[in-house]
Length: 472
Image 1 (cartoon, helix red, strand yellow):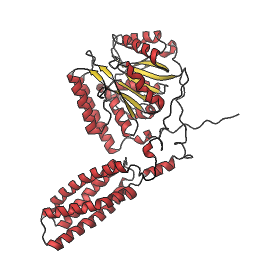
Image 2 (image 1 turned 120 degrees about the vertical axis):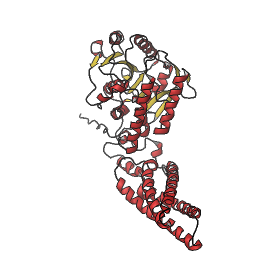
Image 3 (image 1 turned 60 degrees about the vertical axis):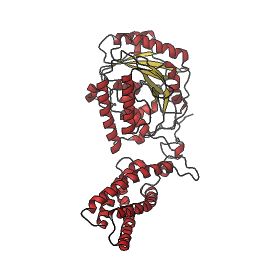
Image 4 (image 1 turned 90 degrees about the vertical axis):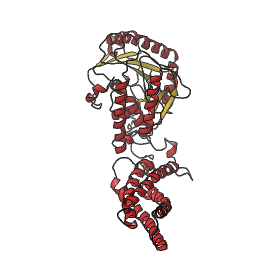
């Protein structure tokens, strides 16, 4: 009997998360240990990690040593561990960069759960199973260890503590990041997420995981945080100043890309219904509370901008002309801000149409404010400037409710309805396709074919040859 296999989901969307159901012999977890000139610490680290996983981890695992261009005896130690331990694989790259090593090894791995940890094992290994369990169960897309959680127990010097907390404050302020610890070398993600996320990450050095987390969070993926016990390594070779400068450059680059909508984050979106916030419930308008908050914030800033512009234009023109010019300029800014921040529309598609519809909303606001000014002038003859501003604020408040309703129902209608229709059963390549664990999982390779030499990054990966100086 001939059976037809279901078509794989397209690269442009993620399937719903489901519990992984591996066979007892499948390699479920691939732990990458990126190293550069670690001939002293590598063998104790790998043997300790291997012993721990063999004793406590309930699924098949593999440890991959990612040697990025070491110049000491690290390659020899890696090869010896590869031969001695069946679950250990040695991979050699001829270019430096922790991010480059992780992206290359993760892209080649067949395990459904991918992780990495620093070679010094500063993080207590008891946090490893809590780290990957939400990924195996289908609860989360990525998982990170956090040294800044309230229940974490951390031993490190004041300088590193200050740098770490300052850096995370910068991420929260500039990129609106909500995860608490971007730099902890203890992270994991699902392979189906990595397949779509890694090609979007440009950095090849220490900023790699921060960029990965920011993009994942902006795309709406779930990031699970695990409080960890962490002891600082006093012999760490990380150059703090150079790393901090490179990280700040990365923050600027990613922030600019997010602001311009240059990143295709929609390829990381989950199908309709995977997120309970996507479900339509009677009497509960989806996203209304979040949209109201965003609209109020944008409206407050736009009102201040409008009043400043009105005051400036009023110096050389009459109140009606100043009102029209100030309202026109602030309307363009208001529509663009609401488009991106309140209603979550990214990219440049339909931007001109949205601005044109915003001008119609502007005409309604202009009619209300101009009518209020005309009524004030008829009543008082020559009102004071402060009185004019008070009347304009009242008129704008009256127009705000109507403006929000028009933006929500006409300019930026609920895109979830179209999304639901496109991903309903019967729509090609979307939510109707069941998710399966990645094919090709197998037990660890034999020693003869486990050592891999990678002289250059894969051609399918982003070109990062210009970023060599940024790696640690």
